[in-house]
Length: 199
Image (tube, rainbow, N blue to C red; front, side, top):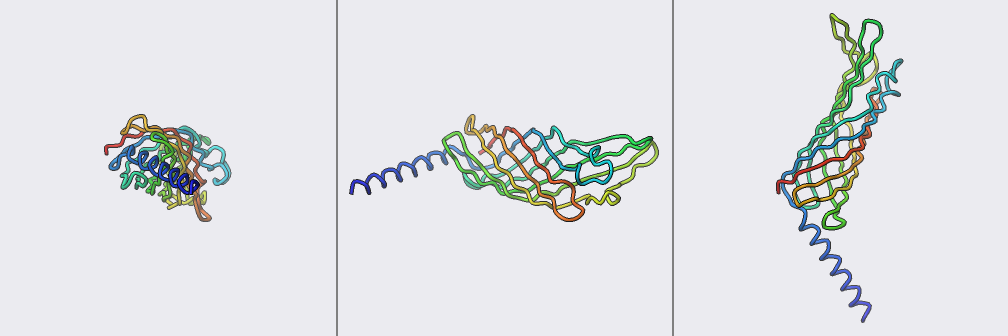
């Protein structure tokens, strides 16, 4: 009998902690900004001067989302990847990439202020390979065998900390998995960010 009372007490206390943690997380509209390092893996995807087309480096992401419940949100974001540019004689070759993504975000509170989250969605990735001189600019995506536009699955994991009920800081790792024979490189984005909840 004592074991049953003890187990019931522990489960009740645990449920109260989860309910209390959920109460600290506002629902409604939020915005966030992230900055970090992106590895675009373009070096292995581009023919010939692949290393020069590599556009790894410092990048940023802006997002707007809506928390439907304290543990579930929908989010739309814009990721601006670094540009790569190099000269071959009188011609300048460049690689410019950005992505717009839509994701479902699930959150699990650990304490009143700390939570972990995961995101699953799809990204619309644009890769623009160009060759230009002083007179003309030419698209070279088809020559390099790289799709200019592609829908790609996206997954992310992260941890956030609520400084106040409305201000959050976080760290995350996002992976965009490109598909097909003419795909650009996969994208890995390690970031830190800050968000504001309007709820």
